[in-house]
Amino acid sequence: MTRCRFLGLAMTAMVLSLLPIAAAAQSHPGHLGGGGDVDVSLGRIIISFVICIIIAGLAILLIRQRSGKIDLASLFARIEPRAREIKVVETRRLSPHADISLVRQGGREYLLILQQGNMQVLRDEPVAAALAQDPPCA
Image (tube, rainbow, N blue to C red):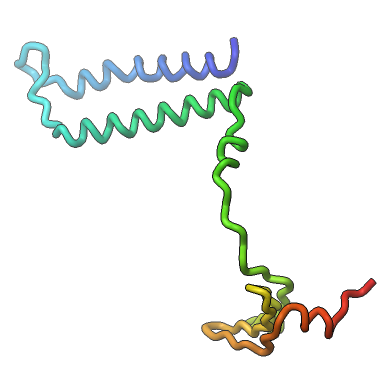
């Protein structure tokens, strides 16, 4: 017996075992059938139905993904994220309360001191000038 089928049978058995408890809780002595008026608003019924449909849809996607019929990664890869404009080149800790960061954005390079509740720009220059001053090590 497969794992999914076993889990389905276990869930069904659990729900069926709870039915007599729910029926006993709803019964009122002296009433035929033991039921009373249902005091559930239409809005709660509709919201519950929508939530159940969403859960069922997610379960279908999960089952298809696990069986190999659908690749969720490629499905969500169609949504292309925006290219990042800010690039943190390097960050170093100066003290327990301060960091120094080298950041590139829009063709410019910024040297920043970041402190608790404060930020200060130490250097602001074009990227080409910054690369010419400090060539990379070979």
